[in-house]
Amino acid sequence: MRIEEYLTEVKNQIRDKKAREFVGKELQNHIEDRAEGLQKKGVDHDRAILQAVEEMGDPVSVGVNLDFIHRPRLEWRFLLYIIYISILGVGTMCLTFSAHPYGNVEYSGFVFQQLSGVLLGVIAMIIVYRLDYTILAGRSRLIAGAFLIFLTFLAIVFGVSINGARRWIKLGNMVFSTQVLFILYLPIFAGILYDYRNKGIGAIFKIFLWMIAPAFSLILYGRISLNDAMLMLISEIILFAIALNKNWYRVDKSKFLKITGIIFVTTTALSALRIASSSGYQNARFKAWLSHIGIAVNSADEKLKYMNYTNSCLDNIFLKSRFIGKSESAMESVYGLPESMADFVLAPIAATCGKAVVALIIVSLIVLAIYVFSVSVKQKNSLGSIVGFSCGIVIAIQAVSNFLIVFGLLPLAGTTLPFFSIGTGHIVVEYVLLGIVLSIYRYQDIRVENNPTIAEAA
Image (cartoon, rainbow, N blue to C red):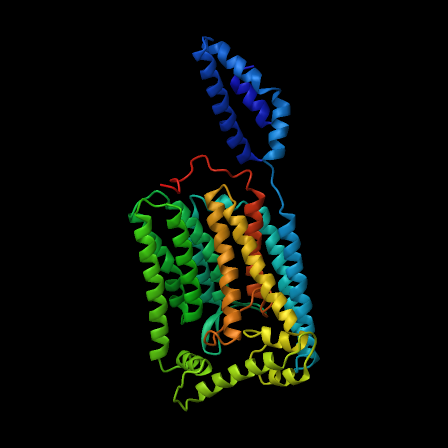
């Protein structure tokens, strides 16, 4: 049998098209290497090819075995953990909503919003899981540009202002936060980092432009949220540092890692300085945080008093909460806590369900982030690895920042606790990120790179 006939018969047994291409090239290289070895032993070329093909074995059996190896896979343990997080989120929030002081109408609304968010999120996760994440390869910049233009268009045409901030999109009776939707830019940015591999120092400048592109999009239709901008920028800097550490660009890795660290520290310091020197709400938050950690701040600003009051409520809630079960004294503080079901959701959970449940939620989200990182580290495909990291970074930063804010270790700010805070939009986005991770695992034995990047040891 000729080599072309053999390869065709083998590939006919493999269902995934991209796996066929990869397997065909691998088998052809193996046959040619074997034939070359036989020729060195004195076998003529045609006979060497035929013998090398015969040694490969029956093409149908080989193809069936390779189809089994290179087939899409579902990470059942991760899926079961997602189900656990979903049940924990819905169950905990239903118990918390039932004890909320606003009555049955609001309780029903909260439950419906949480359940609809989870249901839509699971549907979105399944759709994304079935998609091939490698669509980003070679197309990430086009996808990023289209994504930013589309969101900007939606915000300009359908944008509405809520509490003085034009960061919302209203479609019929549904309202979405544009800030939440922009989180999906991070996996696309990870694809941009991948596409600029081996492009040299010129790629660094282009990556920087893509890094700040979302900020320009946000500025076009309204005031940018400093908190969301910092979340985005910090995540992008971390992803860039990971790419640098992998030697993806023809630059001095150690030098640019130091520069990236300096940029990270400088950006954080300048943001803190801007907040401290402003005279608005952000300044009040910063001063309230200083006061809360024991640094005296002389100010009669009503905003500062409001912030101090909020921090005091949070402290009292956790102080008065029981280890397990509802605490009536803690609930009294919850009644006076503004936006208790949104930014500071851990506080009413502690008052309603107990500190043990809060600890369980914290540990569960940390384990989820670690699991996403572990899946990313094990990927043979560099694109899958960096995209997986982007999903884990979002979950980790959102969760940790929420923990620190609620416990008074960071200034008060608008934040969400993944899978627990109210809001259909952010819950759907979080499930989309999990769908991307499942897609990466699904194709990990199929989307193997033929041309690996510069060796990490270089």
